[in-house]
Image: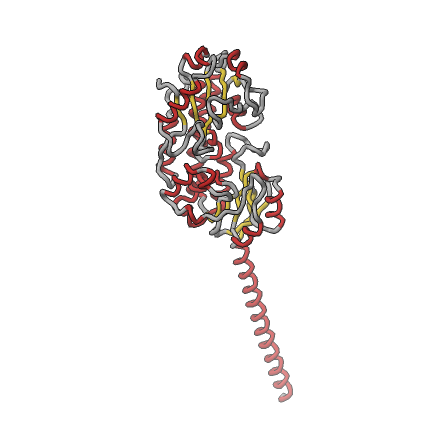
Amino acid sequence: MRIKKVVLSLLLVVIVLVSISGCGTTSAKNEAVNATAATTAKTKIYTDMAGRKVTLSTNIKKIVTLRYMETNMLGAILGKDFDKKVISLGQDLKTNDIDLYNKFSQTFDMGKMVECGSVYDDSVSSEKLLDLDPDVIIVDYAFIQKSSVKKLIEVGLPVVFIDSDDSNPKNDSLYSMLDSMSMLGDMLGYKEKTDKMVKYSRNKIDNVLKITSKAIKENSKKPSVYFELGNVTPQEIGATRGDTSGGLGALLKRLGAVNIGEGHGMDALNPEVVLNSNPDMIMIGGANWNPTSNIMRFGYFITEEQSKKHLEEYTKRPGWSDLSAIKNGRLYGFHFNYAKYPFDFAMIEYIAKQLWPEQFKDVDPEADLKQFFSEYMPIKYSGVFFEDWKDK
């Protein structure tokens, strides 16, 4: 009997020890699971505009973009947090676009942006970016084949491709900027605001296509247009946009225009072609490419008087006074970098309105642009982004 009690006591001790050991194991397992879950929750897998799977932190604090042209887009998404999170714009913004630099400097500390090399000449420094240790590096798809960009990926830096240059044929050129913004809004933690902003812009573009489609069906004659890039003086001949596979050439075709430069790619059109074609309207693309040359400018610090005066210089070209477009006052200008801006819809509205003035009489591109700035941009609206040579 006594031996039996001893045996039972020993069995009880063993059971208790096993129970304690089991509890410890379970507790340890739970802690390991919790730790794994916590680690997993800190990152998320996304698909970028190049179709790549990228893993990013769910708490993006340091943002790099390899091209200064994304400044407006990041400003729209990040709002007041722009200079708290953006640490580099690739090239020096002040040198490459003083207009944009001065405008954002009214609200943000732009002087603290770090330079990391130019993606255009393939000089982006992976060593500098490794030192900066960014949470995300934003690159346009147009530069996907650059060796310096490939190196960033090879060394494990968090590269994400957007598509605002209409470079990826798999994306719809008219909406690729908006799709890029939606993607970044989610990645950067500003999904709700960005989705609302993108919806506003998408509805504007949808409306343009709806009105244009109706206009094309109801009119047997399509308006003819000549486009010229105003990055040289009016005494020189700028390049046209005759490639309809993407960019402005594709947009003009989609809006129902007969582009007299079609088939000439991005070459300068022979002046005789313009005179012989006698287009219904002429459009000049401008930007602040060079702060000193006599070029076509649009942007935050341009006035209507300046833009109209510059457009006037084109009318003095040999033979242009006899063109229907000049006789009828149908000479226009718009910001050529519109496709890289979050408010590109306004320039699309403007171009469509000039092509089909009667059908777009109730559409006010400037009013829509001002509303977008008021609701979404962290900077105040100013300047000129499109202009008529002659007031109607």
